[in-house]
Image (cartoon, rainbow, N blue to C red; front, side, top):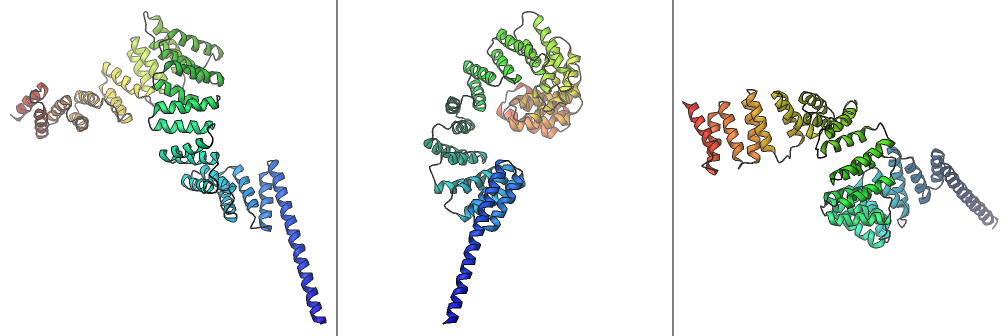
Length: 462
């Protein structure tokens, strides 16, 4: 009997000790969370992580401690911290499979890590638990957009806007998707809805202005550019955009007035001088004063070591129109070494160098242009020009190469076939020339250029 009483007493004492230890552990756990929260409010992320790690050591099964430590890692933002955050969020989600907050946070961390497929899976897991969150549905749409899955993105945006039609970001993203689908009028409506909900959304207004320009809605384009200039007063580029919009619409005086006003506020800005020079250069001229003003403005920009390829090309245009071909060639030599190269610089360089008798430089510029603009619709004429320059340089083999490319792209272009046959004759490849002539005459038996090539080819046989 006495032994039973002793055993009961021992068990009671052990239970009391265990209970006391559990209470103490819970107290220490709560204190660690409190310290972590206080440190995080003071932006002391290292101390917060240390405190939350202590809480996890006391309660490894705590979803909340893992979630908060993950949020702290996420706030730090480095890639390694984001990896740690994702691990904590994944653990928190596993500890409480009914909790949505860890899944949303996990999706956000994976999105920041550009692991879009995994981020989408996290957001979808959230929506399986709560399909009424417009915010998370929008984030799923954004993730699908980053994956270039426009159909899935549009479908998710439809769900998000069904839940909350006043999400300006969702309307903006819908506009981006529709624009990429080449549905410009629908994209315009989406962007218009976005700026109606959030008038200060610069990105949506920029897209609207660009679409209005594409659709030749110049009045609406100008209105958006003027609003952008008002919202973003410190950016010179906004004022320049308004001035150039006036110029495109043929309102030359307003363009110059707008750019002149911007220049008064920013007297040394090269972007404004470049825009003014372009307007003076493009403006219909009834005297040489306009050209002189263009050359003066563009010369200031071109003199800078930071002058862009486009600025130097505009200056070269002014010099060409003023009769200074040699000066234009020097400016264009610089323009074709500044990256990104303006394709127009290469074309103007080619024509200017050819006029000055510099066939090698002209040919090089044209070849570089074709490399920079491989989808140019004028490949045939360009190839003929390269071939003609190659013949002048006594290099018929290069002429054959370029004309063969052009003939493959446009097999029915008789000009290219005739030029190719001529180049093959000059290169001494009579069999190839005969085959080219035969192909061409089969399609156009009376083609004079091909018949002349056939006569030349027959003479070379003799």
